[in-house]
Every structure is written in structure tokens, then in C-alpha cells.
Amino acid sequence: MLDLNFIREQPDVLRTALADRQMDSDVVETLLLLDTKRRALLVKVESLKAQRNTVSKEISQTKDADQKQEKILAMRTVGDEIAALDEKTRQVDEKLTSLLANIPNIPDPSTPVGKDENENVVLRTMGELPKFDFTPLPHWELGPKIGIIDFDRGVKLTGSRFYILNGAGARLQRSLIAWMLDLHIRQGYEERYTPFMVKADTLFSAGQLPKFVDNLYHDIEEDLWMVPTAEVPLTGMYRDEVLEESTLPQRFTAYTPCFRREKMSAGRDVRGIKRGHQFDKVEMYIYCRPEDSMRELEKMLADAEETCKLLGLPYRVKQLCTGDLGFNSIITYDIEVWAAGCDEWLEVSSVSNVGDFQARRANIKYKPAEAGKNRLVHTLNGSGLGMPRTLISVLENNQQADGSIIVPEVLRPWMGGVEVIR
RNA sequence: GGAAGGGUGGCCGAGUGGUUUAAGGCGCCUGUCUUGAAAACAGGUUUGGUGAAAGCCAACGUGGGUUCGAAUCCCUCCCCUUCCGCCA
Image 1: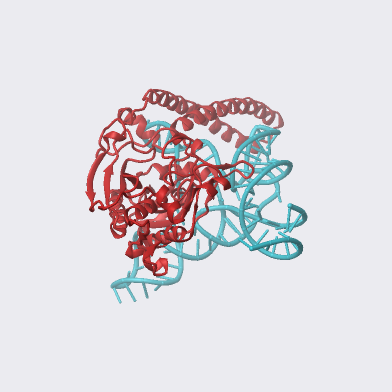
Image 2: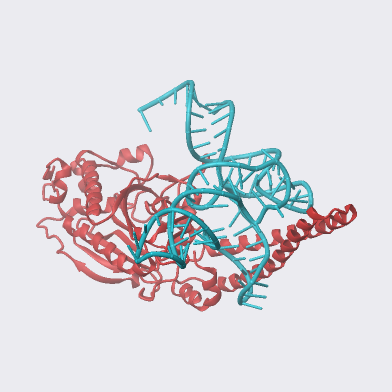
């Protein structure tokens, strides 16, 4: 959420931001109008309340019964006025808040302006693409061939976009998760195991609600929501808290499954395990001071890149343009790994600085070491990495002519020493 | 799922309709004193909104209600503790 004071003082910055994001900026006018209206109402109702408080005190001290009655009657009228104005203010407030809740963050000046994903900028490409003396299979052929992916029974259990990993396939994914968590711990993150179901408030804090309600699974009976990413509980964790400056930055890593309805992506990536309604992810998350967030962003990106490097996966880093930038984000880097069988680059990580956007929604502040007002923290999130796609890349890039798969060296301790999956 | 008790400032804790604009204590900050520290004493010590400012308004788990006036009375929901039941 953006600061209303900021919008009031610099509406043009927001107008430009919305235009850069290929969005309509008319909403700014409505916002400013409602803001003016709200403040006028507040001035009026608060002076009435002040009057009521004063007279109420007088009433308690008035001995004369007639005078007392007179004042009570007068305040009854004032009370009605207050109730009416309070209701009006509440309505304006509600409109204002719901508009504000749907306004995206302002892109950082370093984010390139662009219309859509085609104008994202490739910053660097790292590693050699693997060479084969046979045609490498895509994982949806390779997996069933050696019996580690079972699409048919996944569909039988739940429906389309669900699958079962068998034996070494399941173990390989679990190894990836365990290895990544341990790697991030070495990189300075602390592990968290969080709930996979959260309240609506928690999703609002992370910027998922109200805008992305269509992408979420919701248990109506208990009013609990399945997390679409660990970023959600990792943001909500500190909701309404004030942190000590000396404890910042705080860096966390967490494994969670992620649940997404993918309604907006119906028909995309339907082959294989690239886009499921349920997938596993290891997440990185940082709370820091505003002045440190860009430096932390570079660290997080480097940590995600190291994950690819150690697995031996060729990857490239893209900076998202304004037209493709996520709702919460001011600057985002995507990491894509090469998948030799699919013959394409797969997004496995998205590393973002969201500034104080989530902190304002979640009300997360820190107390400056030097005296002064509490300030909003900055938060950053990044995948480190997203699971099925990392698994795809490992499987496809390391396949041999007979379909067997060479296990990356770093994973072997978690694979019980297995070097080749057959 | 059932029963009982509870939820007040950074923490402990008083408060059952009007000098409570939340007592008192602890902690913390500043000052005095001191070579320094401790102790003592004095002052300060939540957040948000609004206003040029003085100030004003709001918040005692949540949301409603009653009243001239609610931490206090009524209703709703949430959470915590203890006991019972069930359970990986």
C-alpha cells in the first residue's frame, strides 16, 4: 500500500507509475477527491466530539437539575450529528482504502520502462548450455520413461495439473529442498517452518488480497486460505510489530508448498510439471532498513544465482520492465534456468525489493537506534528456488542417451550417495 | 467438541458509568549529585489521524449496541489458560 500523504503531495509520480505499468491513472483523481472529503469530514466531526467531551464533563459537575437536563438534551442532538458524520466518514474511508489497496507500488527509477514481458532486459547469461549427441527428451517423456513421474495417477487423485513423483524423482526433489535450505542457512538466512494456511488479514498484509483473490484456494467453512508462496507467512509473521534496529537486517528462508489456482494461466504450460496448482518452493525473505534494501536485493540475487551455479544449471538474469513488474514490487530480477528437453528458459526465481509497500500494509516498523519516530521497514523476497522447474532442469540437462540421469554432485549426500538415477 | 477462568501501556498490575486527560510498580531515557558508576531526587517515556500552530480526535482482544458520557453495562466473534473428551 502506498502512503496517502505521498499521493497527495506528488500525484504526478503515481500517474507516471501507473502509465508505465500500462494501467489507467484516472483513479488518482478519485483518490485525491476522496482524501479531501475525508479530511473535511474529520475536522467537522472531531470538533463536535471535542464539544461533547467538554459538556459531558460539565454535566457530571452540574448540581442544578434543570441545567443538567438542558445540557443532556443539547448533547443528544450533537450525538446524533456525530453518529451521522461518523457513518459518512466511514463510508468515505472504506472507498478510499479499497481503492488504495488495489494500487500497485511505484517502480524504482532503475526499472526499465516497457510495455510487457518482451521488454524485460537480459542482464547476463551464465554457464554453458549442455551438448548432446542424441536428442534430449522433455521431462514429460523422460519422467514416465524411467518411472519417476506419474501423470495419470496424479490426475486420477486430483485432476489436471497434478502428478505423483515416484522413488528417486521424489527423493531428488526432497534433496533439492533440503540442500537449498542448508545453503541459504550458510548464506546468512535463518530457517522458518510456517503454517501453510493463513487468515485473510495475513494475505492482505502481503499484498495478495484483495487483488489476487482469484488465484487463491480458500476454505470457506473455516475462512482459511492456502498460501500461494512462503512470502505470505514470512511477511505476516511480524504484522503489527516494532523491531529493534540492531536486529536488522533479518534474513529468513523457508520451505513451503505453494497453492495457486492459476486461473489467469489456464491453457498455458499444460505439458509436464511446469505449472501445477501445487508446487514446492524454498523462499528467501529479508527485513531491513530502507537505506539497506538495494544492497540486500543484490545479496539476495547473488544467493539465488549461487544456487543455480552450484547445481551446474545454465541460467540468465533478467530485469523486469515496468509493464511486467509485480504488484508489490519496485524492482525485480527473474532468474531463468535452461531446460534442454523443453528447449527453453524456465523462470525459477523472482527476486524483488518491495520497499515499504508490504510493511505499510502489515504495519511492520523498527525503532531507530538514535531517538526518533518508528519507521517502516523494507522487505524483500526471492525464490531460492522454485521446485518443479529446477527439478525439470536438473532432469533434462543431466540426462544420458539411455534415459538415466546424473545426480548433481552437491545433491548426492541427500540422495544417499546415489550418483545416477536409472 | 464440553466446562470454567481470563485478555488493560515495553512488562507486571489497579480500575464495574463521570477529577481515569488509565492508579501504582518495574524497565527505559534525560537531568541533578559523583572522578566514574550505583543509590537518591526531578522530569520524561504508546500509536494513528487531523491541524500553520496551540491543540483536538481515536484506540483498554474484535465488531456492534445502550448512554449526554463506556476500560467499566449488553450482544457478537477471536484468542489464551486450566480441566474433560477425541486424536497423528
